[in-house]
Length: 328
Ligand code: NAX
Image (cartoon, rainbow, N blue to C red; front, side, top):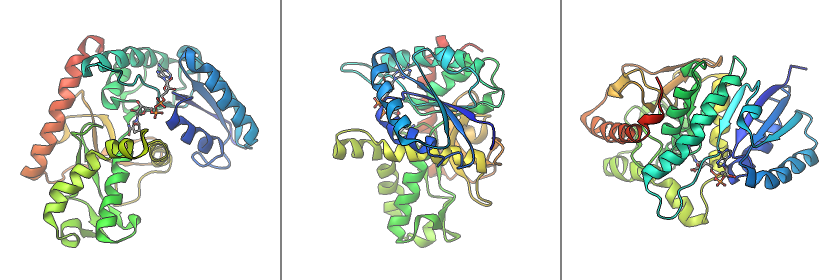
């Protein structure tokens, strides 16, 4: 049996985590032969609810679950962890401006960034809690000793949504759709890009001939999918979001298929005109050892450029609002 790995999950009493934790504990994510120890983190008022989650985990008697540590103290909780799934965040309250939301979350991610310095040397971090890209930027600036390529903000749910929409429109199975990209911010300005996507190896515009649908409905459906789910369900997407966390982690540990890529938000190196020091979604390949690379040399049409610039501008605006908590 392998040595256990330690997985921290913040927001562990929340609804997304409830769809995630049990799959990790069951071995669905890291493998049936990989023991895990869960470090579950919550704010103090939610610790009682978290006790309940821990009781249910016990009651599942998962052979792969070798320990549960619950805590409302991130320094203690992040000690020795190998993966950090940062799901918990402060939701927007009544009358709260975007700047207030960014500032409130900023405090959380400054603290969590600092605490990540206590993690194991192979730490990998996925920020899910919104505004995810800027929260991730804050965390990476405050985790001085952690290499910055270990940080991701999640745009895998948007990626999966885009794949599913294209598959549905073309009447094909979802695995026949490849090379989809989400660019930019995990927000309504994100740019779901079909221009490099393929269906059974053929460029999407040669399979889906409805240009109007591709350039309008496809993009807005993906951009506004989160809102559509809240309107339908009364609460935000949790199961699909948890599934996207799992897909992201699996890509990180198994790599991306040859010829295809995934979307994830990483620190920009200036590629495609996305300013350095922004955490932005890109098409990315992963080698299965935790390393990733932004796919280079994709053609950016004037249509794509305009959409990309809009989302870059939003990320720049968010960064400006939190500049005081971004040490070098
Ligand atoms: P919930 O409100 O159900 O759960 C959030 C939990 O986080 C709560 O239990 C809360 O007590 C906890 N929390 C707040 N501050 C914390 C802190 N400082 N440390 C530890 N825990 C803390 O929200 P849920 O539906 O679970 O969504 C979680 C987050 O994911 C939200 O920010 C949401 O906006 C974001 N999402 C991001 C997605 C993405 O694709 N990046 C998609 C799904 C989801 O909307």
